[in-house]
Amino acid sequence: MTAPTASDPAEPVVRRSDAGAVATLTLARPAARNALSFEVLDVLADHLAAIGADPAVHVVVLAGDGPAFSAGHDLREIVAHPDEADRRLLFARCSDVMLAITGLRQPVIAKVHGVATAAGCQLVATCDLAVAGTSARFATPGVDIGLFCTTPMVALTRNVSSKAAMEMLLTGELIDAEHALRIGLVNRVVPDADLDAEVDGLADLVASKPPATVALGKAAFHRLRSLPLDQAYADASETMACNLEMDEAAEGIAAFLEKRPPRWSSS
Image 1 (tube, one colour):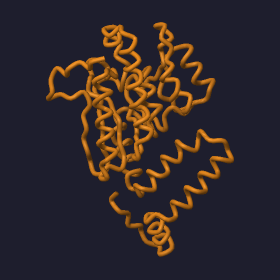
Image 2: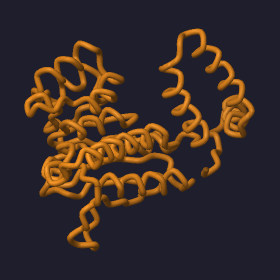
Image 3: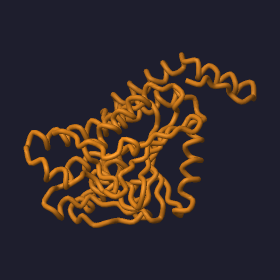
Image 4: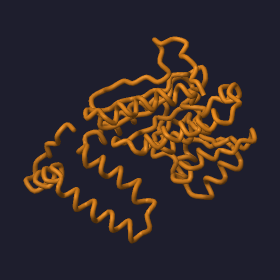
């Protein structure tokens, strides 16, 4: 599938802005409810790769411009490309982006307002943390158009219980932010007016932690959850032993024993 050309290069489909150690990626197709077109996925993948190689970035925030976070895949684009190979490529590219978020050394926080549906809901579920404004609504509504949300299901079932996930997948109905909080799809719900401040505070807090330790911990979290219990403990024990050999652990322990703030390196 050939990605459509952006109508105006001065207005990128994904914007990056940095503040201190936090990089914010904003989906910027508000007229299309930030649908995940092939172009958006390509640009998002490029940004994630650049951020992963940027030692100055400790945390990533993923946001949406306009009235929605993301309405999922661009159905108009899918209809315009009826070739099965193109469609397989689109879903593979989307999966690659989700895997890139999970594999990124920096934690990723979803800042959600408005609707996050289908692959947009998948994006929220894939992020390490998620903060929702009270306007946020979530759904996996593919069943309503005869296209079951199979790829969103992968991330959804790793965040919420099987019963909660199946209800979303089988009914396609929107759930509100408080419901999403109860089932574990998001970490916090705040008034929309407080969403920026809440996410900024959380991002700054996480960014203040030792970056190499956070990267090690994020990788271990995603790795260990798929292992049998005995293998998980064996892997975790080895990981902690290796962690103790890191400069950050030596500095953190020394600072604790000396009753002083730790002095973390910037990368």
